[in-house]
Image (spheres, each protein chain N blue to C red):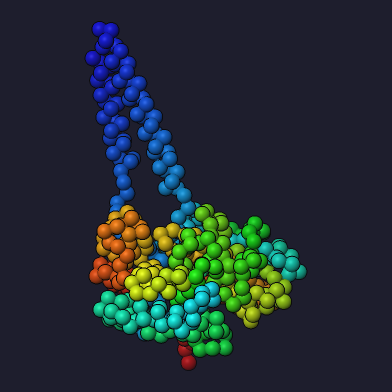
Length: 228
Length: 205
């Protein structure tokens, strides 16, 4: 009888330990924290350039497709001029490689570089063969108490851009979502440009445009609110 | 009575096995959580860095490694007076400057192009313990790698997670001349450890 009691106590202790130690982590918010510092400034537009080194598409075509997605089409839901104009993608420049120390702006003034490559060549092995984004120029923000980034490199698969339509819109808007501080899916599937079918959210398809929730998250990040 | 003893023994075995399984599972789980992660809550950029470590290396520049270390150590002592140095987590431990970086400078990577702003950082799973790598190169090598930039701060390592590959380690390149230019040295070290330049207060008339 005594032995049964000991066993029961042990069982309770094991179950208690299990529930504490194996509990899943609290659901993470889908902001990445890799934040572009210029986003908070109304005065500072997000100047970006487009590079077309490793694609069979013409530069004019690539530029047109990227800019159309960011600025021209679907002005209600594209990323441009949101939060009272703090996101601003209207200023696009010639191929990034033509911006050097003698030009205005210089390449160092540009906050986002979009590299369109049919096979991702200049970031080999990083992107898992698809599009991705790399924040650079880490810089501590005293007022917000966190590291922010002064510029972003974005790689877009040229083959997807050339597919046109919603495929192109999805790729450009998804990678720009990273630039604005959003991360990929974390296992949950709210309707979001960051949680498409290929990240385990088949119900979402591959959205062409950021959702209202995506805009809310970015707006909170712009305001310096990091918690969900 | 005998049946009761067998049942009790069986129960003990099952309980012990469960406990062992739990311990193993927790150990594996903890191991996964302890892997290196990117963090923006400090300027150290990854969770594995407990303090600011910097390495220095002379790339055939003719400057003795000890001299490079002394210059960088003195520069970092000045940078440590930056108003954000402690808040950014850089002052958690005494700054540690090592001779030798045990890494290929990104300007020596086959994919490096001087026209690329990012340079040719390598993607890593575990970041280097060094938040900043300092390389001193001869003037002609600096010119070939950076055109007219001297000193130059570039990306040395990136770590990919959640669809993004943030820079987690930077490198600062100096020619012998810029290494001995105190303003240039301090500016590049400040940027290299991830702090913004200090804007001097306006002088009273």
